[in-house]
Image (tube, rainbow, N blue to C red):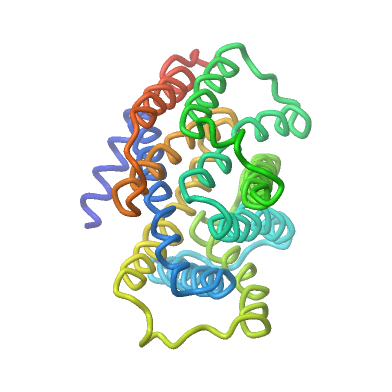
Amino acid sequence: MRLLAKRWQRATEARPLLGTVALIAAIGLFWGGNWPAVRFILMDLPPFTLRAIGFSGGAVMLLAWARWRRLPLAVSAAEWPWLAVTGIFTILGFNLATAFAQLNMPTSQAAIIAFTMPCWALLLARWILGQRITGRQWLGLACGQAGLLVLLGPAALEAGRQGLIGPMLALGAALSWALGTVLIKRRGEWQAHPAVITGWQFALCALPMILMMVWREPPPHPATWQGTTWLALGYHLVFSIGLAQMLWFMNVNRLSVAQATISTLIIPTVGVSSAILLLGEPLSITVFIALLLTLAAVAIVMLFKRTAP
C-alpha cells in the first residue's frame, strides 16, 4: 500500500494535472453518492443523530489515521480560530442544512440547489480575497449553472410557500459552504496536515450535534435499523466523512477558489444519477444534458488555464 502511495505521489508530482483530475473525480464520486446514502439513513435516523454519528466518526477516523501515520495532532494557536470558523461553515452549516433540506424536498433537487455554491464562492472571493473573475471562469460558471438549471427543470416554478422551506435550507447550505471555502483560502498556508485539520473540525462540530441529539431526538435502537441504513451509514462515514472532506481541504489549498468550486459541479450530476438508480427517481434525458454542461464547465476552467508567469 505504501509503495502504491509513493508511486502515485511521484506520478502526481510529475503530472500535476493528473493529481488535480484525480482529486476532482474522487470528490465528485464520494460526495455525489453520499446524497442518496444520506436519504436512506434519514429513513431511520433523525438529522441531529445522523450528524452526531457522522461528525464523531469522522473525527475518530481521521485523527486515528493521523496518529497511526505519526503526524503531529497539535494545531498552532494561530490556526485554531480559522479551523473552528471554517469548520462551522463547511462542515456543520452545510451538512446540517442539507439533512433538513432532504426531509422537505426531493434529494435530487436539494443537491442541485446546494451546488449553486460556486456562484456564491466566486462572488465572495472577489469581495473577501480581491480575486478577479476572468471571462473564462464566468463562461465555465455559466455552463455549470446551466447544467444545474437543466437538472432542476420546471420544478423551481411549481413550489409554493410551503415548498420553499427545503429550497431555502439548500440555498443556506450553499452559502455556508461557499463562505467556509473562501475563508480556508483566506487563511493562506496551513501548517497542520489536512487530516488533522479536518479531524479537529469534525470533533468541534460533533459537540453541538451530540447535545441536540440528546435534547431533541433520542435515537432509535440500532436493532430496528434497516439493512440499507447500515450500508448507507458505512458509505457515509468512510467515503463522504472520512475521505471526501479531507480531499476537499486539499483541493481548496491546491487550486484557486474558482477552480475548486466550479469543479464541484460534477457532484450534483453524480448525486442525481445515483438517486435515479438507488431511490427510484425517474430517468430523464436532462441528466445527460446536465452532465455534458457540467463536464464542459470543469474542462473550461481546469484544462485550458494559462501557465502562470
